[in-house]
Amino acid sequence: MAVRRSSPNQSLSILGLLLAARRGRSSSEDGLSLLECLMAIAVIMLTAALITPPLFIATATRVQNRRAEQALQLAQGEIDRLRVLVSQGQNTPGRLPAAVGTATNPAAPSGLSNQLRSINSSCNTYNDEQIPATSALRVDVDGDCQFDFLMQVFRTDGSLPASEDPTNNPAALQRRTDFVVGVRVYSFLAQNNLGSLETQQASLRLTSGQGSQRRRPLAVLYSRMNWSDQSFNLCQIHRNQGQANCR
Image (cartoon, rainbow, N blue to C red; front, side):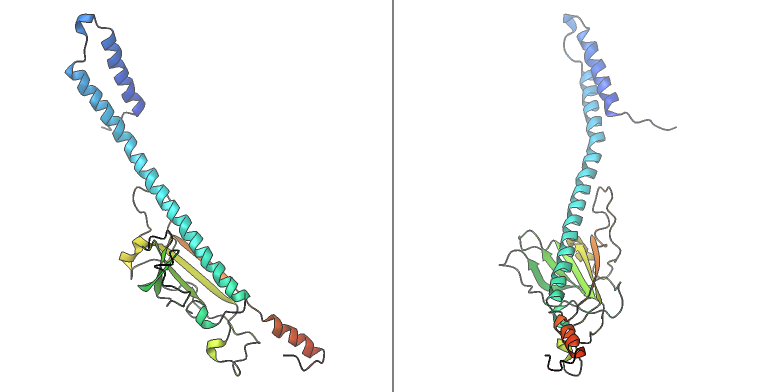
């Protein structure tokens, strides 16, 4: 037989009836009986039991959504930083993320970098150098020198534009174009699951705990980068017009 749970309104109605019955007594019967006190305590405890779980769910969901928002901002900031490098022609292999061939969905990170990116200069040890694609960079966003997120950044090989003649430029200086950059940002909670992390983005839903952020990234962004040497293109136009002395 199914048991029907009392709602908070029904519990308060019971308490109201008890108080009304008390007011109807004669002056010789003033005062609450032990049974009435126990009933009042039971109603209060029942009301608290009904209200507490939704409060826990609301708080946990709010914390999860806040972390996801910060993770998305972090991923977008890294995409923007790389886009500026490409637009300025500083897209040499050493300044770009580690290449992963042609795969746009490489494996999740299995290790941690020793460096820490922090808004606090006293503990920041990262200077935009390349991190292996199999490692995650620790990121501190609130300046307490403790990492809040783990960020994995990678790119596809891309192609070599005509201006980057491999016979005249060493491989370390050959600027790439038409490549895809991927950024995954995990919660700091994922550090305990390195080696078994997933690549699919965590779903944001009502939760009373930590959801799927222990294994899945809170934010995943991909962006295609293209670069063209404007001075080279201009020289090509001049050469086509018979001006062979363009440099």
